[in-house]
Amino acid sequence: MIVDMATSATAFGKILHAKETGKHIGEGLAIDKNGYGTTDPYKIENLLPFGQHKGSGIALAIDALTGVLMNANFGNHIVRMYGDYDKMRKLASLVIAIDPKKLGNPVFAKTMAKMVTELHAVKPAPGVEKVLAPNDPQMHYKEKCQQEGIPVPAGIFHYLAEN
Image (cartoon, rainbow, N blue to C red; front, side, top):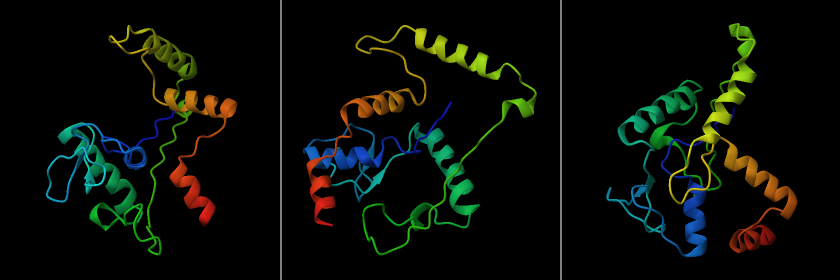
């Protein structure tokens, strides 16, 4: 199983997409420069953590295990993703890889497959097509891109073409 995610309530790429398409984002995802919630992608100063205070604790732990432990930037010291391109961001990542065989679990793969199958079998909420496991959306998107190509928003395409 692969879980690849930010600890914010939404991905920053979705903010850029909202700007590109002229749409607002959902409630409870971001705050403005005064600390008030905003849905306007042009007024966003910071993204909120997922899971409120518990998510904030997880975000702090990840920041400690990446930025602090690896002597990289952390918290407010992180250079904004789409700001001054001349500044080094000095970021770190956290990858946890576990070999189940080293822990003495010879049936891990089979049991993990059963867990995902059972998750997929859960009756979805009204209006939801299917209950997904971590990485399912990315794998579906990968398959779609392999068949149809990778979509690039016009603004990004023009930026890349000009630079």
